[in-house]
Length: 359
Image (cartoon, rainbow, N blue to C red):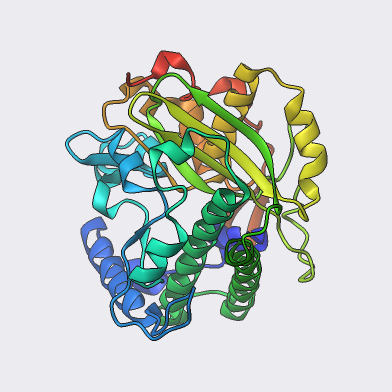
């Protein structure tokens, strides 16, 4: 969540030794090989939760499978931002089977059953979330983030000759791991001790229709509704920890449960929460829809969604942005300051609105 790190996608990585004189197919083959090797190198020998030795890890879904199935078409969904990149090739690559959508392998089967039983059923999500249920969601969110960081670190070690400022990247990645582990331990403590407080429920609502989008994940909000800073993503002070808003959009059989919450100690969201509470329901849904596409990656949409949504220019632009970065990468040593207008939440399709419902 340190955005010094998010900007790595703009200027730190330089895969010149991989992509030079390569066509698209060759590049993809090379990257697939790197990903396979990185997955093997990043593999743990102990469960992240219980710490016991483990040789067969659970194929965990950050979004429960029964929720993914509610929007799937023939067992498939469109995963993440590539669905909105206005390219038939990108959309094709985003199509994933439910079994392979947003998965990670970092805990044992016993812990997967023990720690997530509360929220991984429809009945639990139809009632106002308990502290334990919110902690389970936060725990899983942070596990997914840690699994991703471990994989990235392994990838960068494989291609280290093609990375500019790798020392900086390594340092920032470790800060990310530090912050996610901190949040992970907070959530686990609440579950283990069955604490009755720990998270602030900012929003919870049941829609009486099924949305075409499903989402679960942490969001480090940069600016609030009025443009005021929530997390200063450009502050490189290593003592500063980015604070997460946890959001869930869970389409069920005939309805959709939506929730947003934050840890009580993450005070950056107190003012944000007050401003959000003054919005009417439609405005809240519109704004949450905007936050998902602007900041989050762990979402999926139904393949039967209207093509006008997938090809929406403003939405495509929004999902490709990086935390309002005012910089464009020109070359290894050059930057260009750009003045691009920010997209308003009212300019993109609101997939939480009834007009886009699946049923």
